[in-house]
Length: 459
Image (cartoon, rainbow, N blue to C red; front, side, top):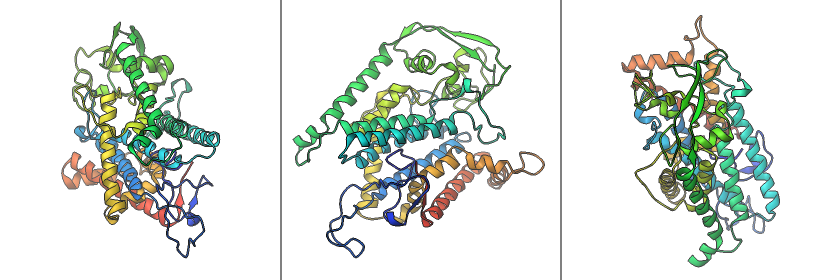
């Protein structure tokens, strides 16, 4: 998988002849403009590939590093974790940054498509591969760190994790670039508008449709099966059901956790069993005595605290993220109602604007004035981001490492290292943060090793 497929995937390096992609034979480098001067390696008259956008690799690597940081240190630093419902934190910018890079990558890779049908087929195949990978990694089969078990009841598999939604977003962004952009040269403001006019219209229409559904869709009363009474349980197990709970709604336009249209759409299209069992609203004051962290239920907690909810938004909201970032990333807006779980339009445009500004800043620093050494660790990570994401962010590597222990599963290299740092710093919070920073540095160096060997994982 390369950057044209998904933000977390590397897209190779400039010396394509020395690359050894593991799972791909074609070469879709991210290069925005042609280089004109001949060289011994590229004599005059020979077709030469344009220079690679290193800032995109840096931005991708920074985003993966930030995901590792907020996922692994967010428990010790609740302020670094996702917002329980309304508002935004550092963690809430990670997923939009992935989706933003999808739009940038799709715009560059599909800038020239002689055969639109072939390009569409190529985008569809890559999206399907990524979706399948997401189901395997994030569908519940792998139980993650601190668990030496695996397996999932197909009746409870999570169909739409992060990678699956990124796959949908990538396909929509690619289709937008392939079919909606006029094939004309841009030499004035008017020609620029003509070139991208249809993309903007479609993005505005989809956004308007989403807002209309969010505020106008009637959400009736609904019920769900309670899996546990007062604990955090992500993987349902037979025999732990304690009955059905009824949620009273009968409203339109609610943006709260129990009665919003996003959850309603997901329950109808996916089914309750296939939704995320550990949603962020379990960290709200209504649902946790340790809010904004997870914790036991407070007295008289509402029933919806135990209900499932997919934290990445519905089909429609995720489609807006990919399409709108791709089409209108220059817009900037912030309103009082900003919610990552609902992927409100204000949240979409706020995080998209920040992502656009950061990429523009990195482009100037890295590609224009050519300051690369300062960001070299993240550039390495960005060029092989798929491997890092699968092994680190999906916790495949730490889970495998914890499988080797001394007498007790707690006595493994990963947990002992983290405990040692907590002892050295005399603080669980600072020790955990130090452990996560070392983890990020480790994966940067691992990506450097793969880069030096010319190894890049692609779908």
